[in-house]
Image (cartoon, rainbow, N blue to C red; front, side):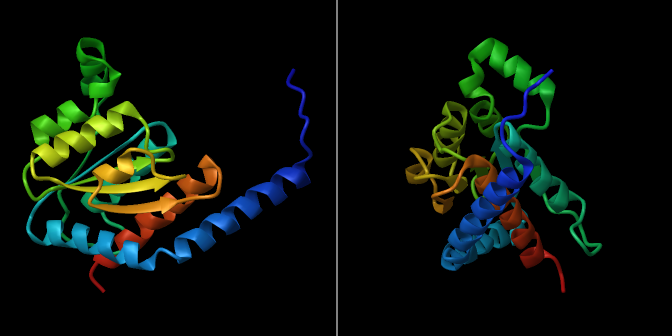
Length: 192
């Protein structure tokens, strides 16, 4: 039986304080948000594809963005081209088994991406080898790179054309702000 050390009220106060700090950080990044929205809008308007990837909870956020683009956010509209590189377990396990886990996204970028597409990576650290490999593969193919990052952005920050970096909070709060960004993007591209 697990022993719960932290009191519920302490956990609640901590989570809310982290969320407030993260939201304040995101509020200061409106110019960066506008640049990301413009890059995504431009690709979609040109009939290009949005590719996404991340690890763990960030993979879930990458998948969420793609389902909103292909499906819909609020209004019925034509689907947008979008592929989540985390979504195919057969590709992930094949590539990981044959080439190593650091190749699971980069190899898919090599296979699927074309110049003018946009790759959006979700990472709380910006240091995962598979994310870095995907960004390098995208750059080599003329694909735009967008990083939704945390902390100092790690090495990924310098490999991205556009970044939104949530600093000064823990990974959970970073992911919460990345989710808010997903919804801001969707709001910005849906017809009024």
